[in-house]
Image (cartoon, rainbow, N blue to C red; front, side, top):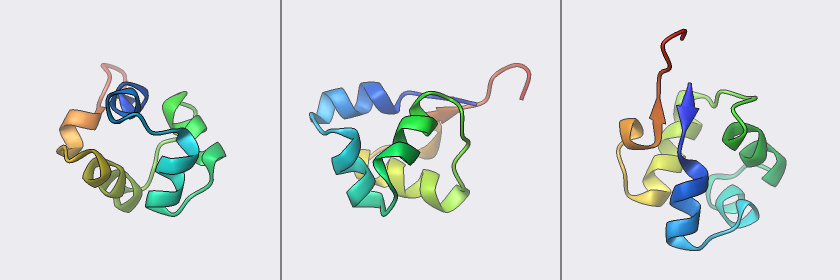
Length: 66
């Protein structure tokens, strides 16, 4: 699964730490999600999408091998 969290953060001008605080996780968790090393739970993915005012599909997408 890939995501565009880094791009959305840049558009909203918020740091990983600020996003982490808004969704109730650590900055390291946001970093690992952005780096595609960790796939978030459905609840966390929905919270992230809500922060950006986007649908889940606008933030996360499946890759061919998923």
